[in-house]
Length: 420
DNA sequence: TCTGGGGTCCTAGGACCC
DNA sequence: TCTGGGGTCCTAGGACCC
Image 1 (cartoon, protein in one colour):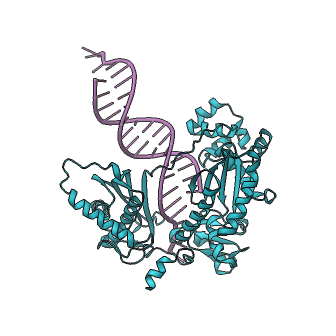
Image 2 (spheres, helix red, strand yellow):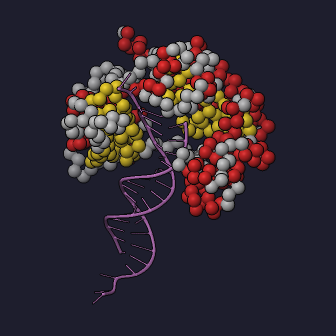
Image 3 (cartoon, rainbow, N blue to C red):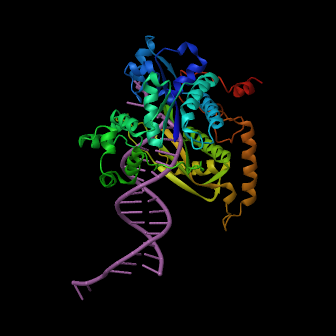
């Protein structure tokens, strides 16, 4: 059996954990650059505010005092996530952190009569120790655990924990779930299924396997199997990521190559830092940029360029150097850039780096690696005290709109350094 | 005026091989 | 005019997730 632990309205709950005045109020948290609504409290959901709503469409509610708003504060959310996951790790032999606010626990080895009491205790403990409310769904497959979690979240009677452990419960739950709510059935496929009269998860589960395979491929077939109670979505060991992307929208359009270079340098430095943190190196650096697609009155340009590295690297000098080389190759004057980003991929463990036959810079690389590691000891994920001259001074979020940001309540080391 | 960011997997088709 | 069959690997794009 699996238990899916999912934090309720996670970003909003993180804000509430340190600002009790938000409790019981309609609250939304915005995406980077204060662009869209990405998290909502139950109260703001009840007001009809949809996920992804552009902020300017609900700003009047904020101005008139009917809605609370916060810019996203990932330092805070990341820290609280880490604390929640730590509690789960103590409770179950194996957990898979699926996203910042969700984890699957493998309940193997725990007697079934203990499942619900254990999970009820976890709900209580996580709330008490971190301030975050969570819901838990228990079922024989991950997809069914997702379904159970929906019910745990929706109906107070479950006290935060819902179990699907027999066929009657399974069919009842599926019959009450719209097909589009199933994990793995997305925006594109759901309308097609509905048009064919498949409206609930149970309708879908009752279609013949071959039909599902033919219409939706192996991924659809896996979802179908999981709804029957057959495990088809495996628990992967946490492997190294295959790509890392750092990108941001800007508060204002950037027209100047030098200004854009500073941003791209920062994005590349953040990517390189993440590589080093995971003890990996990338074989390719990709740079992209976008003009503002909503400004149909302005000329549009969205180049995308990859720069291969002779030898996979993770130091700031090489990653930034490659990114700037790409930027110079595609940058064009006369456009207002709204967003840019850097992707590093072809990632391998640093222990597997092989020198190139034509690499006569091995010694220099070694020095650059040492310099980057030294920088890591002084920098945080928010701010670079040590940086290359091509990067910007100040906070990484400078030039990105964050007008409603709360403090990093649980990780104030940053600010202490600054005060000293 | 204002519209996010970061991932994974699968598949089809092209390049290339024998 | 005629010009096979069967693989693998890579990549771009689509679909999905949070």
